Length: 481
Image (tube, rainbow, N blue to C red; front, top):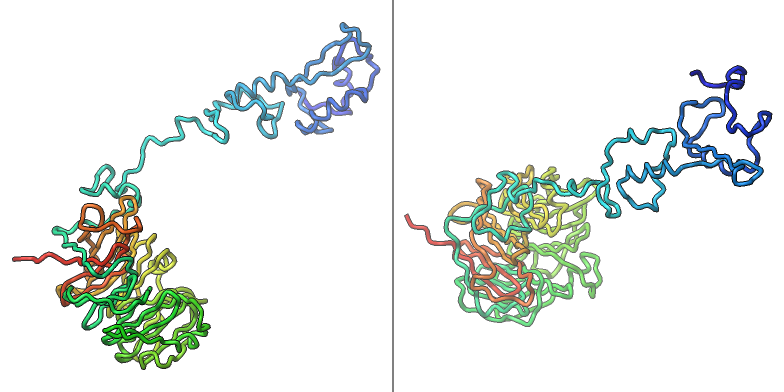
């Protein structure tokens, strides 16, 4: 049937009156009916020039004359629409007004099966669909295969990579008494191992002759000849000689543009290529202070970016972030050389608790939440070593003629510390020791007893581990033919 227009007089004459009792000469609704019809016009958005005569508007016209009223009312019967909507919504909250932009002309019976199946507020799916039938396994590569003796991986290894495999023979772990507790830093000198705990202690490299040097609380250490340079809790710098003789190094503050009483987080590194008394100090700014006379005087040097980490080991390398992005600065004989980081290294550099290790042409970079990457070409390119997560301490060295990286990884779910060794040439890693309940480890005051520093002594084949609960020796087993 074509649309009715005002010019179609014949069609208008054939339309039946809305109510047989209504006056045929009545041209339109009374003013009293306008408030009833206005909501309908807003919801349906009727066109003035055309309308679909077959549309079911849900109107029910009743004759109120039987009740004794002289006038007539047009009743908008939306009861059917609301009841249909309630049935389709499957018993959802009755206070809701129904679907948005509800079109009364629409055939609600054709909407199909609803997806709502829960009475919980904010739930838009059936309860049986909220939980997948296939839950992920701990090992994403080989579902269903559990690692032997690794139940403590339950919460910390829910990633696409597993921790490294265990070594065929575990290394020996023993507590070294006399060094105290709450150890923050280690430094291996030519004669002694320096230990920064509640006091500054030194230990003979063979593990004997432990003695307290001075009542100095240090956060970082760097060996300088037979002495050690210590960053104190208050942000000061002290040089300590064996026997406890200590002297302050105040000149560094002016070189770094710091006030003498400022509590700055200083980082230090030895400049092996600058002589026995050369080292640098950084304070997280765009400059470093360099001394070649043991700290008597310093020269400030701009490095073109904010220093975020000073690498342990040699040669001296700095991790910086500037307008040109992330880069490694290598301090050589001719000065600083800048090497931009690739995508793999930049990903790690943006992580939490970043550590950098340096050993010849090898650079190792770790982040507690992003794993480890290493470079064999001075930082020109990096490759990831899987499984090296939650690293809290890092040291590089040579064992059995091959360059190695030693990591301390902490598994929070079981409060276990793992010692991981990486063969840098083959880029393979394995767990060589475990620190935690069940070993000869005294519980520390802090339940989160992760390793804070590592030092590898190639001559005595000893990995020294500093923790909250004290100093530990980790020694590889003696291999026999």
